[in-house]
Length: 507
Image (cartoon, rainbow, N blue to C red; front, top):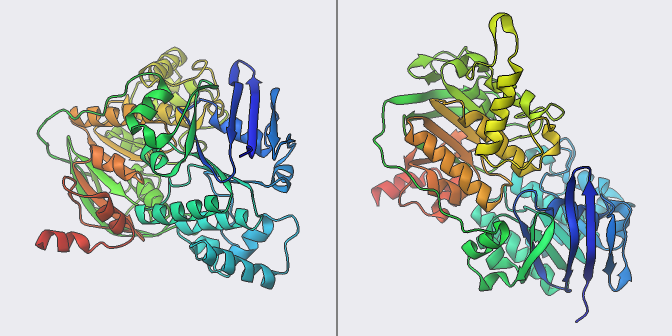
């Protein structure tokens, strides 16, 4: 069988950085092919060249045995290449059909398009109502919009970047059934994910990148997840280890937290209640759009609350701003790395200063900045969390997503906090970096901090949490011990089955 896509000697260099060097591999028709690599390995640059967002410096590509060199995504789509991005490109105020139309070169009349959306979404097990407004859809349903928009182009190659990062286990099963159906029809799929068990379950072949070069290829189902991770990073990985220790007094208490969302199409919080002790890790699961962002804003102080709703170390923090809450020992790392957690055009030194000035003593007398100490702090973060960057003078936007995530989490944890709140701490991060971040969170808890981890990665929550709760529609289930929970139970709780903890307890 001839290859659908063949890449030979592809290379791309940016000033001071070799993103890809002599990359060669092929994808057969109907093959689900994984592209694996740690953060900064060159995966994003490579798929951008395939999709026409970036032009290669060297090498060549062929598609259907014909020369293929797209100069823009429109040319790639015209050649039968489609891409579902990790970050959805949707307008929340528009309907499903209107969003799909915006992604088409020559959309048909809206009535015809709506009928086509309903037919295709039904055929592939991804039901969608074309008339629904995107702002009212769940994260899983929004991903369906992106996939259906691609399928209406009748692609021969579908590129998927971290497609399960916002899905429950039940939604992942539906997605995989759809991808297998597409592959059976001859569509090739280039699949990027850091979830290695998913790769083993779904993919027929895999190409592994390390520092921009192909270092291996394999059949994923013939390897363990550990072996795949070791191929990616070039060394053995160890699972995060918990240090035994007694739990202390309550460090963070939330009681009756109800709050309207300031975010367009956001989710209001409804009577949130929990308490976290010193040395305890509380894991909160939830699919994107169920109140995670609002919860972090309320805990960090970016949204102020009524008296008594949030207490830090026994002190009412409802009226306190983020800086004042940091003075009480609470640090927070939001999900959105670039723009919220870090200023894109500022250097890493400047970004270290933004949240570290108070806790690290980077402000001198009269409000003057101690730039030498700030640079040293940024360098400490880079070294401690293996942030791949030329140095503390690099702009935040120059880092890959995973490396920026390591920097942001490291910046908060190295301030010796007593309360840590993180949202999606390992989102888009490779196996090695994820293990490092999880270990750092466990270490911080072992040192006496109360840690709240909001995450969509269920394996992560089961690995590090002492207690667990699920967030759905702005409501939080009653926290329960994490030990003994299954991924299936958690998936149902994330979908709104909050009553199951009662049934479980009475069983």
